[in-house]
Image (cartoon, rainbow, N blue to C red; front, side, top):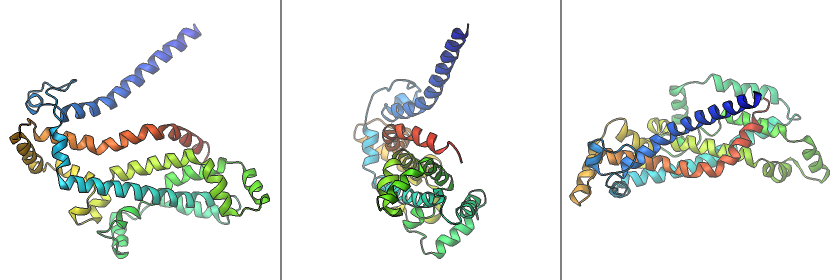
Length: 292
């Protein structure tokens, strides 16, 4: 009886997980098949599970768009540089706070956590960034989100799980704190570092609000701003004119095809990277959340 109940639980569990996966994957698949389907078939509602009249003219259109390519390059720069800065700053903040001999770590941790619940808001943040001369520069995108308090706590907890004997053996061998950190602690912290890389990279890749309030020149916009202007604000003139130009060359696409192609091209890098980091993601999160 107990065995049958366990099997029933497994069946229900798998059914729920499969349904959940399909609810996440189908919208992505739908955007892909719309982006490569014939525009008239899409307009008639004939595309629901399989693409109709497959064409890749939509992706040629967006790759020929200089604004999209420029914003795509900007997003790569912001993501790579921002993730590198954020992981370094978070690690340098978390490691001292994980050491019991660090003077004042309890008070400093309380002050840092206080900022997680109470912050100045948009206007004070803008005044600080503007006062530092970073408005309309790449530093306005990279510096303000350099440390997430929540991610720092996860990393600090991970460091606390490491045996103190590692530090003692390092001291016995004549190493100082910096050498212990670089040669012993960091090599053992690959899971949590990979997790932080994933968290910060996804945040920077999807981020558009800092760029919207701090950047004034279109040439510096990330791809999320371009996508937002086309998809949310309804600026369809560029997509419709691009579709008209493609149709004049023999392709049969619409502005809807191009919008879905832009969305899919925007999220594609994260979809490609995630499977390679996922194995570290689970381990890093589990170890980092054992105790606070």
